[in-house]
Amino acid sequence: MLHERLEPVYENVVQRNRGEDEFHQAVREVLESIGPVIDKHPEYAEQKIIERICEPERQIVFRVPWEDDRGEVQINRGFRVEFNSALGPYKGGLRFHPSVYQGIVKFLGFEQIFKNALTGQPIGGGKGGSDFDPKGRSDREVMRFCQSFMTELHRHIGEYTDVPAGDIGVGGREIGYLFGQYKRITNRYESGVLTGKHLSFGGARVRTEATGYGCAFFVQEMLAARGQSFDGKQVVVSGSGNVAIYTMAKVHQLGGTVVACSDSSGYVVDEKGIDVELIKQIKEVERGRIATYAERRPGAKFVAQRSVWEVPCDVAMPSATQNELTDADAAALIANGCIAVGEGANMPTTPEAVRSFQEAGVAFGPGKAANAGGVATSALEMQQNASRDSWSFEFTEKRLEEIMKDVHARCYATAAEYGMPGNYVAGANIAGFTNVADAMLRLGLV
Ligand code: NDP
Image (cartoon, rainbow, N blue to C red; front, side, top):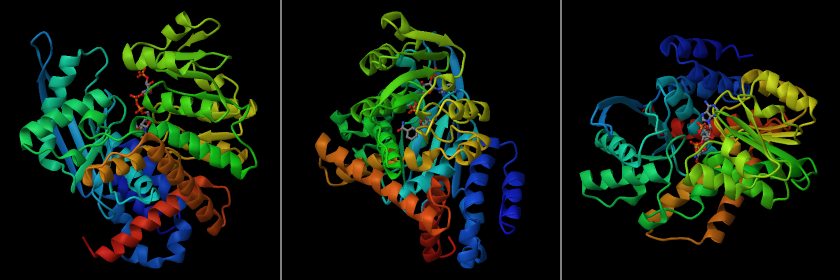
């Protein structure tokens, strides 16, 4: 249900952004939480803060022409949505996936505003990407694509303006090619313009691991709030990319056992516990498919084209993509005794499924809070670049853990303050929103 003052705001967003379903969904989810905030702070409504937050400050759409290995010309579309810079330079990843269009980039950019605010770091919200599909492309094709993409993007970004990073389909390899081209075009060694860089050219330790590690830390805090821990818990993680891999690694360190993970072709079950090094070899080194895991690991089983959420578990950590965990999946998880869900991905749980979890009393950590460790560590990378410093793994991981504890505490306390104890969705949305809204009020009508 939407507050009466927010209903027309939402209707307007739908009218002005037709066909952008994921963006509508992300906006609605935030607006559903902030009704009580509008009652308490009518100045936000009077100054049209919500309408302003829903309209990106700037949207860039561009052609990305490049040549494949056969000499054929290919055309993709590039996007950067600079959503909100009240708290700092726009910050958020780039996604390369065939499903990318304006609506996906805007949903991700919108979520990013509140996530970044929750980290307590001085970063605004933005997101970008392309409908380019890196799957099956050679390294040289990926390089040529990245160079063409950056040839346009470079004029819109900078360490004080907009600082992109990785997301689906954009990892260390792509960030390297993008930074190389930025440096060539601008003739500036501006390390702080991109995060997720390799250590050899200004990257930060723990950035690769940060989103997954951070999500595991967040779930650990949710479990602790209920007098529990990861010890002896069976965990299912969806996906087998960057977020999934380091979620699994940290869950194992914290005493849980990950019994299943997936990719878009299906899932693998391994009752002994997923061998994370083998997944890394297959996914990061060979860029292969998840079925290979079952071929190489005795006792493991591959199940094609089914939902990983049918595997019984105590804790579910969706870490692949948006709307991958449906209401039917939530029903199966609840029936199997799942007690906690931590979203490693952005908006992986459908709104109906979120409601089912909350009604069943399952601790539910939304991505905005639970996966904020990635961008928080990107902000730490920016700090190191600005001071030309390089921190140790242990020190950086400690900072990440403290930030995630703090994010959890802020969500928990805010939910309680607004009379919704244990509701992390409300806590995250309200805490993130009020941070940004207060800064916007002070900055005047800009
Ligand atoms: P990767 O590209 O490294 O991995 C994505 C994984 O998800 C792959 O296993 C992929 O399988 C699977 N996947 C992608 N699309 C689909 C789909 N339509 N259906 C089923 N599976 C799919 O991306 P990341 O790990 O970086 O990102 C995963 C999620 O985490 C995204 O929602 C992203 O926005 C979010 N996130 C990432 C952060 C980061 O630091 N990287 C920070 C915060 C959030 P396949 O290979 O078969 O496509």
